[in-house]
Length: 96
Ligand SMILES: [Zn+2]
Ligand SMILES: [Zn+2]
Image (cartoon, rainbow, N blue to C red; front, side, top):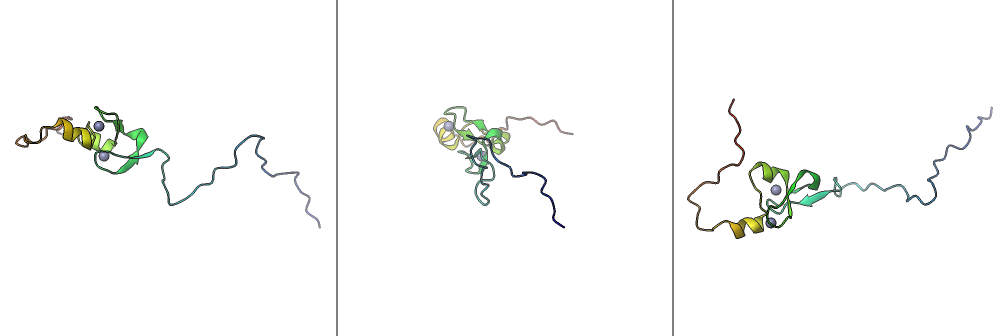
């Protein structure tokens, strides 16, 4: 018995459309991954914030820690000999 084809089921891309994006594994998982200029980790750019001074990428983890400047700007802005005071966290979490 011959099985009848159900018509053409081939997925033909519309004319002018780029070919299906080839997913390469092992490289960047996130397309918007950027290297944090404060901690050096590769984080998602969409979840980070720009440096308050130069606008370069600072990841969300650093922002949570109170980092608003990238490493370069932090060095430039922070006086190097005022290490007597511990850095005060910018976020005051209510204790519960
Ligand atoms: Zn970071
Ligand atoms: Zn900066």
